[in-house]
Amino acid sequence: MNRVVPLIGALCISLLSSDVYGLPTAYDGFIYPNDGSPLNEQDGGYGWAGPWTEAGDGPGDDFTLTQSETSLDLPNLPFEPAGDSLIATGPGSGGNNNTINRPLAGGYDLAVDQTFYASFLMLKSGSDSSSSDNQEFNLMSGGSQVLRMGSTSGDSFWLGTSSNSIEPITFDATYFLVLKVDALADGSDTASLTVYDSSESIPASEPGVFDTTYSFDSGANINGARFWIGSNASGMFDEVRLGPTWEDVTSVNPNFLIGDFDMIDGITPADYQILSDNLFTGTTYEQGDIDFSGQVDLTDFAMFRRIYLEQGGSLSDLGLVSVPEPSTAALMTVVALGLLVVARKGRQQAGL
Image (tube, rainbow, N blue to C red; front, side, top):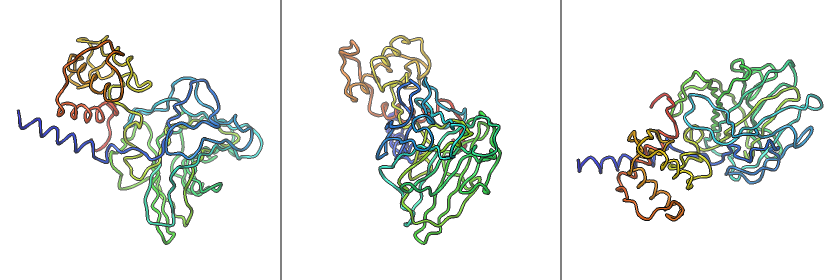
């Protein structure tokens, strides 16, 4: 038994340092007040150099937030979406230039050899129009679009150009789109896109084949992202991410904190109350089972205490004086299991 504990500890360190649990360099899960307000001028998430800025017809009206904590989701996602989602609605007339833009704090230079990734969730609502019915995510260089993807006015997924289509889109269904960009200094750049629906396994590591590729030559600096909704289109976006690896844009929720049982406002006394209310009766992480033993017990109290204190909390907030502390190896096991089990919340994906 004494040999097993160090082995578990070493395994946990390996898991925690693995790229499998990468985080994006830029992220917005639309975690904003639940009041249906416009996204225009909102600046949540991280990795951005400024707020979202709406352009086109009716600035401030085309992109709004859901009025409750309702995220787009899929049963096969390897992460749990957080916060709200973005509603995009075209004005129904006028020029087809309804966009909302956001600058990146760090860009991606297509004039040098490098690879980067982006991902987002989207849902397209039905439309009777065959024109100005596009729904897109764009990579930008200043005010110029460099790469486009999403749904055409003909309601098919596409990358780069409308002729490079993949498959028809099903209205009111959620999809997860993952983009890879291989930039070369000589200008021979390649973009690859895969679209996942609710029936497809999302792999833990980069697949060998994407749904489609698109070749383009550009020495631009990708320094911004943009959503575009056609004048006659409507739909939703969520969980936009950019990063240097596949895992950065497809793995755990970037806002995940072990001990935050209710997934609200970080680790707070409310999470302790959840644990307390479920003592000796709870059986799941959401009920306070930090160590995934199958029961909420005093060990869970001890582990929560350490985590709560390390993030700046006070025992007086919890009405506690002293609780036995778990071993370091046990705590590492908890963190690794938390990332592996909680963030995926029972979801399945290829390779795991």
